[in-house]
Image (spheres, rainbow, N blue to C red):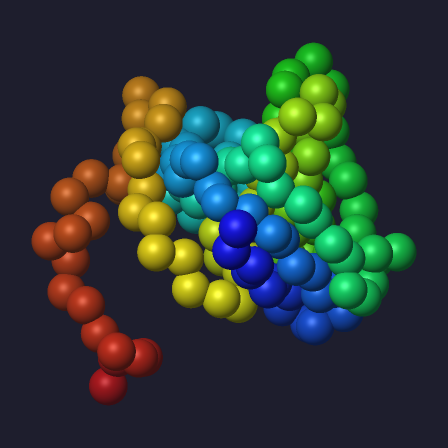
Length: 134
């Protein structure tokens, strides 16, 4: 099994995930777009993973959206997305952007594309820049 290190933006929460990720999905549902503030959520899934909090576990806040299956964990200081174990406890969901180590797995699919943002079309055609524009 691979070991992945992760953390939040402010560094208060650090964790390790021992896992082989089975799936990597980009979810465009309204909930994931609201969660991320972006075009989609990018999450890795594993049924065999072991999560170990290295620091800041007391800073991890869990939010469950009533009457839905949507939930998330985040740092109570900076708001960064963190790993979460859904209600059944059988699957670990890890926000891809929370990892500090490389993930070689490519996304498997875009989910809930019927819910995607109006501006989320042909994004690959937009110019790419290494940093801020001049």
